[in-house]
Image (tube, protein in one colour):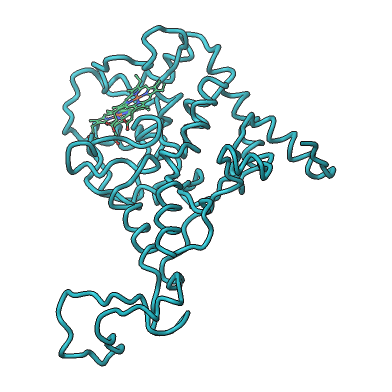
Length: 325
Ligand code: HEC
Ligand code: HEC
């Protein structure tokens, strides 16, 4: 199908071609393309850097991390990388061989070489704490990169730099296994939480850890949406507190007993037995919200997918986030 493009659209289209993406992040069009462009310059030099350059970016780190198994994570040696190329941190701090790990000198050097977390529970430990949930999103870009260069917030500028794995990073950032739009869409539509069958909500975070929309560019034609399931855009979930009971007609359901009023509990109410009805009043009354929006917010955290690390509390969930998951 022929699409007419206005001049401003053409500009965006060219820029998105620069980003080489089918799905581009909505809010980040201009800024991201610019950072990518400059990232490419740095990254280009990373790709062709000499062994000496790479060694310089590892030198301080390996004065403590002495027995690291594969220093570049690329055993084929097709690229020469230093620790700081991926992790960041300060690679110019050394300790003399044999310095005791509990000495003041060692601890001070580690403190300066490592990027420090905002939340103290992440500090001085080699495994992530259990159930980090949204604490992970509140950490800075630099800390997330230090801790896990494969996290989706940072991967475009680590694994994706110099065009090395840009395609893979883009694909995993917008994959169904990351945004889980299929689950949210099915739960919301089938339970009357949201009236549109094509998924509208999906999970994605920008480099600062803020929720962001993701958008197909150029937008799919109606035919592509219908036959191939290409979605035009996915939005972050609304806050559950502002959600409305999905189907106002559920007031006619037979339901349980009458609901207690706020601050006026009913002593006859059977404990733990839910009322079948969503509400016996209309939208915006009795502080009723939609249970599906609340349920999805909880699953997003309690059973996180790849934007978050695993919960680190039972088998199957001892995993990192993003490309390292
Ligand atoms: C190609 C990029 C890359 C390079 C180069 C690299 N790393 Fe890593 N490193 C990673 C990734 C990705 C992980 C996995 C993080 C995870 O699983 O959360 C990792 C994990 C680690 C871990 C374990 C982190 C944890 O939370 O358990 C340490 C320690 C580490 N790297 C140190 C180093 C040191 C020291 C060097 C240099 C000698 C180095 N890395 C070079 C990408 C890199
Ligand atoms: C003075 C010693 C020292 C230096 C220098 C040092 N590290 Fe570490 N690093 C450690 C120790 C010890 C740990 C184990 C956890 C802890 O005690 O904080 C660690 C843990 C890590 C971890 C796991 C995550 C975390 O926050 O604990 C990563 C990743 C890492 N170091 C990367 C680096 C990189 C990259 C550099 C160089 C820029 C570097 N380290 C320099 C001593 C050091």
